[in-house]
Image 1 (spheres, rainbow, N blue to C red):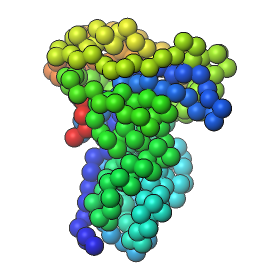
Image 2: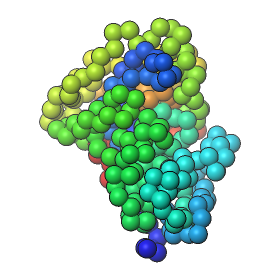
Image 3: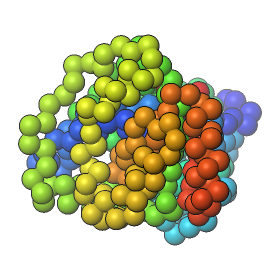
Image 4: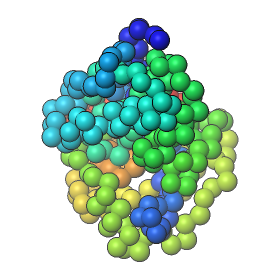
Length: 297
């Protein structure tokens, strides 16, 4: 049994495009999405040590609205730990400290990233088989399998099928959230009510691109199917997108996931940092992070 203190980043997941099929009898939707992960500037931090039972302490600037995160005992980190115990028969415990930096209910998979980080840390701390973590990941949430793998990938099926997309450049980006939660359930229900999903099909693979500009040009022909219903639920998202599109040197602005976080893509990291400085001065009430997107660290 290991007794060291372990820690890991839990980076934001960004859906560069998100195509959504019609609702299935089980209430879920087939998805096709190109996913990349942010760097350290846009990530939660999770640490853990061996304990007699399972517990978690929440800290960090993302806890300014603690009511949004729900009961600690129902947090995905502890749910992941309990599921891994059940799958492996482990009787070991763990004491987590989650330093929350990512906004909640924001379309960037913060809770899923935290759960994936917990599974990686516990696999090491408890000495369990990595296959156990991958087996239980889909039941924890659609974004958990791709977050657990941590690679740029197509996320398909209900999130359980991951197809790596290795031949893509890292993409300089600006992530922005207006400080408003956009819960996933109502957005999907509005999408279903509008008859969403007709003509859905999956990509076989993402073409290889060496240059950011070429990748972004290809992405411009894709879409986020949940963007319209999310804007209907949280109209401020449209203003965020307009603001991002007006920034200097922006190549593409789009919403991630079910919102309300939006992203702007740039050709260089310097351009993304300049945009961060400008927008942070104009909108100090928004969550704004310049980063680069690609494989998780």
